[in-house]
Image 1 (cartoon, helix red, strand yellow):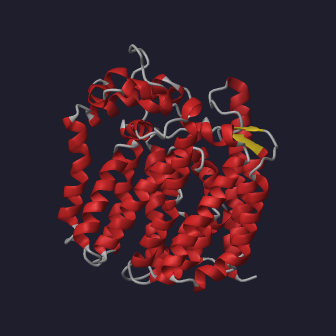
Image 2 (cartoon, one colour; image 1 turned 30 degrees about the vertical axis):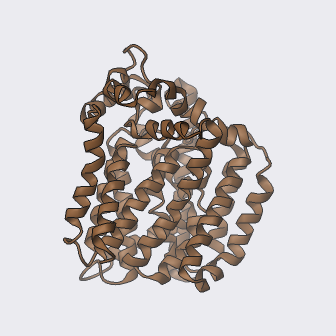
Length: 442
C-alpha cells in the first residue's frame, strides 16, 4: 500500500470516527434533555430497516455505474457523457426515493414535511402575498407561515405556486420536478470542471457525481432543486470567465445567482464559490457587467412586487431562534454538522478532499496552475462556504438537506483518487445502507 492511499484511508477512518462520536454524544444529549430535536443524531431520521419497490433498481443502477461507469465516462463523446450522467443520476435518485414508496418517498415530502404546497392557496394574488410575506414570518404573528416557508425567501414557494398554475399541482408533480431538475446539477458540475480544470478530471468525476449518497436527500426535498439552480449559476459563470460567449453566459449566470438567493438565504454563501471561479477564469473582467446586470433582475422584480429581502432575513433570524434553532445546542452542532456532511458526501469525497488539501498546502507558486490544483481550489472553496455557514449558528442540524447545494461541489474531489471502481462502490454502498436502514426526515 503506497503512502497516499494509506493517508486516504486514515482520513476516511477519522471521518468515520467523527460520525460515531456525533452519534454517541448526540444520543446522550437527546436522551438527557431532547434539545437536539432529532431521533437518530446527527441525522434527522429514525432507525427503521426496510426495503421497497426501488430496492432492486437502486442495486442494479449502482452495480452498472460501478462496473461500466468509469470506462464509459472515459470513452464516450462529451455530449453523450453529459446525457448519460443525467440519465444515470435520474435512475439512481428515483430508485433511492422509491425505496420508501411513492407516497412517503416522493408525494408527501413537499406537503407534510417541507410544507410549501400547504400555502399555495394563500398565493392566489402573488403580488399581494409578497407584499404581506414578512408580516407572517414570526411565530407570534397571525397566520404565521409554516417553518420552511418562513425560513426561505418566497422564490421557493412561488416556484411551486407556478407549477400549480400550469396544472402540475400536488406532491407527486412537485417531487418529480425536484428530482428531474435537481439531478441536472451533476451535469452542471461536469460543464464547470471541463472548462476550469480539464476534461480528463471531469470524466473521472462523473461516476462520483452519479453515485452520491447525497441523492438520498436530493430526491426528497426542494433543496435538490436549489442545488441545480446554484450549480448552473456556477457552470455558466465558469463558461463566461473562460471566454465562452461571455455576454450570454455571464447574463445567464447572473440571473440564476439572483434566483438562488431568493430560494434560500444561506445560498448567498455561493459568493465564495463564485469568487473561486473568477480566480480560475482567464477572462475575469469581460463578463462582469453582464453578470451584475443579470443578478439584479430577480431582486428588482421581487422588490417591485413588494418583498423586502433584508427585512425578511432579519425577521427570519428571530423566527429561527423562536423554534428548534433556539433550542438546539450550538456546542454540539458546530462539529456534528460535519458528521452529516461526511454521510452525504461519502468516503471517496473525504479522501479526495484530503488530497486537495495536500495539493494546495504543498504547492509553490500560483495555485491556479495545473488541473488538479484548480480542482482542489474549487472544492475547498465549497468547504470554506460550509465552514462559514456552520460558524454562523444558522445551520444547526438538518444539514444533510440544507447543505446539498455546497456538497455537490465537494464530490469532484474524488476524481483525484486512484481505483476507478472501488471508491464509487463505497459511495453506493453507503447510500444504500442509509436509505435502507433509516427512515430519513426528508
